[in-house]
Amino acid sequence: MSALLDTLAALWIPALGLTLLHFVWQGLLLGLAVALLLALLRQASPRHRYALCGVALLLCLLLPLAQLGWLLQRAAEPGALRAAAELELEAPDWWQTLQARLPELVLAWSLGVALMASRLGLGLAWVARLRRQARQVDVAWQARLDALATRLGLRRPVALRVLAQLESPLTVGWWRPIVLVPASLISGMPAPLLEALLAHELAHVRRLDYLVNLLQGGVESLLFFHPVVWWLSNRMRAEREQVADEIAAQALGEPRRLALALHALSQQQAEALRHPQLSLSARGGDLLKRIHRLAAPGHQTPSWKLALPALALAFTSLLVQANASKPAADNAGRRAAGSVTVQPAEYAFQLPVNAKHALVLEDGTGKVLMEKNADAVVPIASLTKLMTAMVVLDAKPDMNEKIRIAQEDVDTLKHSASRVRVGAEMTRLAALKLALMSSENRAAAALARTYPGGLAGFTQAVQAKIRSLGLSHTAIAEPTGLSPANTSTAMEVAKIANAAARYPEISQITSDKKDVVPVNGRPREVHNTNRLVGAKGWDIQLSKTGYTEEAGRCLTMRMTSAGKPVTVVLLDADGSAQRLRDAAKIRQSLAKLHS
Image (cartoon, rainbow, N blue to C red; front, top):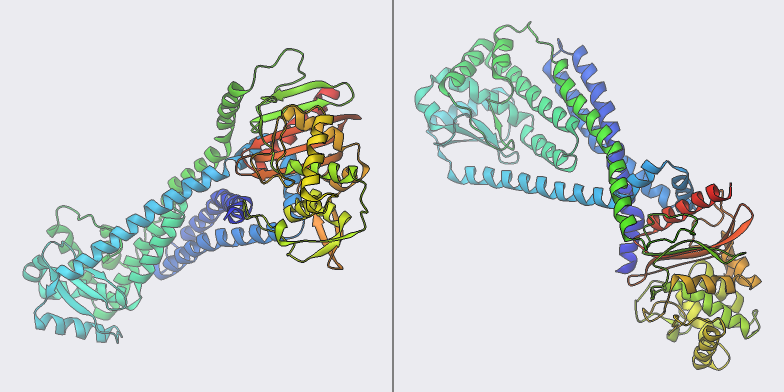
């Protein structure tokens, strides 16, 4: 479960958040292109404008899907996360802040989709209730409808039903379509005019407009935040009514009869009925414009200006989303600054880092350049493996001796995933590389189990190492860091990192971007869990990351800034991205300090 959440947080949430952000400008450009094309097609058949809007709405769905697929595919490529991290660290502050808000953005979008889906569900329930309440119509009227259906080329049976509370004919369903007619129209409208309205509804049935309308509702629910989507969808519905008018007029052979029917309908209904748009009604669209068009087919009113408010709103949305992060970042900075331990004047710089505990130590002088709650005792997760590595190397074992992963090495505390199976054989050096570079828990457990004297001897050696380093606030209960009982402070983690840096094997392994280790006699490529190792502009001599639910995201590394060695400790950051941003802020501050 933890591995699934990690994958979700590391891949899907950032990819989905970026997809939503990118669709803001993608939808804006698409809307602008459609508005221009609609202006050119203002004298054309409404079928062409309807097709254009339909294709554009489909692109509104396909563009984010393609973007999301591309981002996920790129993230799955070897080294992609590291490359993305390097680019992100070089990005402007406003973009880094915006990316830090991606989880909140995805959460807000998810809530919006849930709300819109509920709206769609209520509309479907409303339609189902209409079907249940409707009663059968006179046989003569059903015969008229069947004759019209035959004239329109419909082979499926279409039922005609009467409903008292309706004020306009409408069509519901696509598999078993029903045309609902208000009782007032049956008794109060001349039969030829009502027949014209029924022809309009049958045109919707022939074109499967109910199904298309339902799919439109799905797109609106997913992309509810973009005004261009709503504009396209509304324009598509308006053009759909004109297409249905055109088909009905052709079937009747009398466009004026349909125009008179629409005029009579508008006069009979003094007040418009509001209902969900899951049904299709003869009153849809601009009724007056439809009457004029039927009465005078050559007349078309240019409609491209209708797109301008939606386009302006989309552009405003883009600006708001791009700039809203700055005040949010300022507020976040003020909140974070309020939680930072008050810094004495001699500290070189202060930063509103995300990590709850942080330390920047100049190794040559021992001067603390920056600290945040550095004396609090907290879990340190896999930073423990630096201590494990030192204790193993202190015993001077044969690093080329082969050891085997046993069932005792399996994590029964967190049930963490592992790429090393029980029974896998490797050298002790390979196990050390797996433990330090890819933070492989089974490899670390195997190193402790095969320590001279077994696990008991390893535990005694760890306690002796803690005492020798003068770590009065550090406790190590097991070799992997999975236990929350493995605790220390940021100040003492810096001491552990400096001690580990004196071991050439540890420095070499943890400062490599990647390596190939033999497992069961086969080469296996492993990558450093710290994406900054090997990244442009980073000179890292020692590194170790860690994560458990109790410890949060942790990082310690020894790096060089302007030729001066510096140790950085970050404990309990909210996520990998925040941990990287904290490190980037520290590097930038060090560069300014040493310039």
